[in-house]
Amino acid sequence: MTDSVKNKRPKWFLILIFSMVGLVFSGLLMVGGAAALAWTNTEEFCIGCHEMKNNVYAEYKGTIHDQNRTGVRAICPDCHVPRQPGPMIMRKIQASMELYGHFISKSIATPEKFAAKRHELATHVWKRMKETDSLECRNCHNEAKISHELQSAKAQARHAKAKVDNLTCIDCHFGIAHKEPDGPGPREFDFGKK
Image 1 (tube, rainbow, N blue to C red):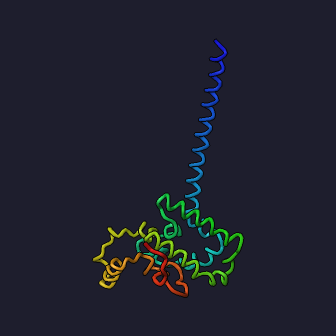
Image 2 (image 1 turned 90 degrees about the horizontal axis):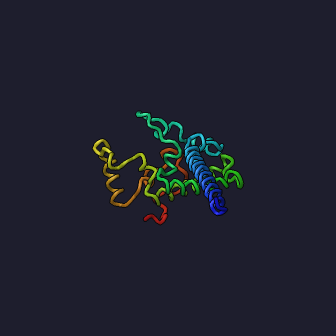
Image 3 (image 1 turned 135 degrees about the vertical axis):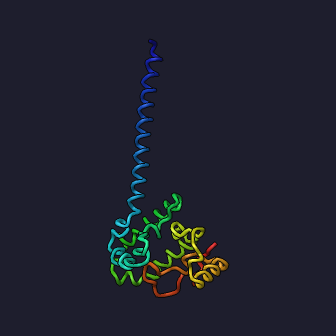
């Protein structure tokens, strides 16, 4: 064999080895990323810090989203994290910035501090939900599947008016899983809704 043929075999062998290592590493990153997303979408993760467990989670207990006649239960990510991949990743990035308040500034570390910031925190959620046309609500509440005839006449009229007025779920349905904060609600703010 010539020297040029001998030198080509090891190069191809190295390329094959590096390609296989790259594929394995990519696979591990994808599986690890998916596992991290799944883990951060659990109720246990969401209430892992005392600010959430002792405040908003305590309020959520016993609400219609926690207990109801059908046993269907919405947990934190069902209402606060979109299910669609792109919006979910964006929300996870935003949420990672919120950790600053927990670990660094401790801006909501006590019940008093939390109460003082409650309206501001709620406003952030309302703004995000108005910008997405209450996407998280619509993950469970599919308008096309709602039996409007089973709603009261008053609810039917209000839903029809909300549609005409270009309102979204959060404009009327806020404070249903958590204590309604003092101050103006989502309809009173101009969040630049589409």
